[in-house]
Structure formats: structure tokens, C-alpha cells
Image (cartoon, rainbow, N blue to C red; front, side, top):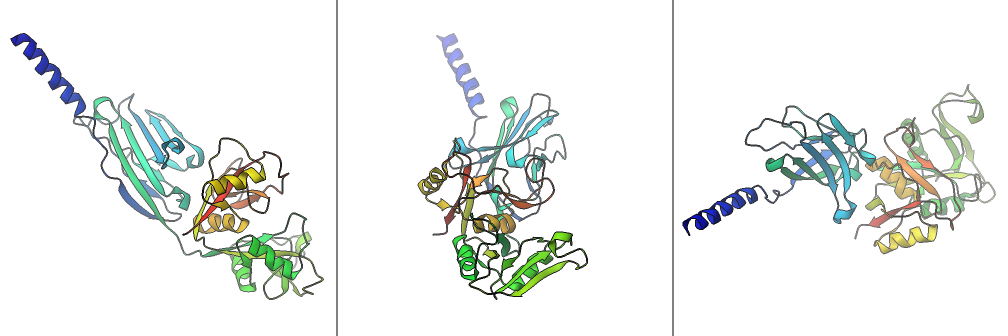
Length: 339
């Protein structure tokens, strides 16, 4: 009887010791950073021995969604082997200031990076699990000028139609001063467009033959006042900082245009407008290499960090035209306004 009692006590002691290692993670640590900055989420191996990382120890960083099935892999490391994923590729790395450091460094932080992150260090009985809430403070950019032409093609808008075209895209027709500031910021566009004062202009940073000639120098090319009813051009629109959330809607399959619009509606949002995408791209550094439907029937994607196979030479909103709406061609970008 004494031997049986000893065995029971031994089993309970071992079980209690094992279960003592399984603890709930502490409350998430809040980290605040500026838009476009680099930020470090601090995570370290918690071990009694503190020998640091040995071969076989695994580090995994995850961006956590409300629905865990939509979690995004960020980085996985095992020894010398490291892999980054999706939009985090080539933009995140481990700090590794010493042998116990698994802190994550995120470069060129975008508004889309906001949210919860989980650090897991898998090391047998000394596993570490920490969570962080990353908050991003927007910079001083409060809007963006972008050129727009409709599905029917370039130079098809009179002044009244140009004003309405911008409004339809969640924007307003740009002023001369707004276009001038955009030109100072690097906007170069060789198609003339209406401005709010009734003039038609376009911005050139690199003078060239088809765009006013090579002898004119950089600046705004100005056609002056034009007949608001009869003259037809493109338009320059101005989109302010978003009052809501612009996002890529995760879907298992490509969608037709109608399916895309319905998917956003089912998610409590609307299909995003061109102005929403430009504002998210410029003001919030939104970056995603997936072409998606927008409300005007176009397909576009925003690249803030130029890279191979996306937009290798410049940050830009890439335009893929106006596809057949009945073909399952693309995913979709949605916009959910502030309540």
C-alpha cells in the first residue's frame, strides 16, 4: 500500500512539474511607432539555463487576426535557416543582439502593419509565447493628387464630367496648388487634365519630346482655360486622408466584378474606390502586390516599396485596365467607413 501511495505521489509531482510550463501568455505589450519608421518588437528566450538558441530551437512570428484562420505568417527561424512571408518578405528580420534575442525588426512600417503580433520560441520545456499590439501614427501627408480617365479612354471628359468623375472615386477635382505640390513631390504625368479653376495642365519632372519638348524644363505644362462644355481631357483628382479602413479582402478564389462588390458588402463594407486606394497608398504607405477590383470596374494594386515582380522601379498605384466584369479575374479591395 505504501509503494502504491509513493507511485501516485510521484506521478502527480511529475505531472504538476510538466503542466507548470504551460502558462497563458501575458497581456499584449503595446508598441507605438511612426508611419514609415523602423520598429522592434522585443522577444527573448525565457530559460532557466539561458544558454541561448541551440540547433533545433524554432522561432515563429505571426500577425494575428480576429479569425485565427486568417493569421499571416511573418517570419520563421530555425538555426541559420530563416524565411519571411508575403508582404513581410525582405522587410523583417530578427535583431539577434545576443543568443537569446528573437526580437522582430519591421522596416518601413505601413498602416497595414498595425495589429497584433505573436512571438513563439519553441525550445522544449522552456517555450516562450509573447504578444504585441503594434499601433502606427500617421505622418504629415494629408492627401494625394492622382490622374484619372474613365473606361471609355483618355481625353473623354468635359469639365462637369471631370468633377463628377473625381467625386465618383471618393475624391474631388484638384486645384492648381495641389497639383503643384504633387509635382514637387515627384508626380510626372504626360496627359493633360482638368483642374478646379477650369484650366488644363499636367506635371513633368523629366522633360521629354512627347511631353512638351526637352527644352521646356521641368514644371507644370499649362494649356490655360478651356471651354468647359466642348473641350475634353482627363482630370487630376485629390483624395484626402481616409476616414475609415481600406483593405484587401481575403477570398479563396478569384471573383467577377459583381462577386467582388457583393463580397465587400457581405463583410460590412463597400468595394473600394480609386481615391481610397491612392489615399491608402500615399498617406498610409499601403503596399500589396495583388491586383484587385475597384468600384469603377478597374483592376489596380498599390506598391509603396518597389520590388521585383510588383513595381521594380518606383512606388506607384499600378493600373491593369478595365477587365471584362464577367470573368473571374481578380480579388477585391474594400473600404469600411468610420461609424
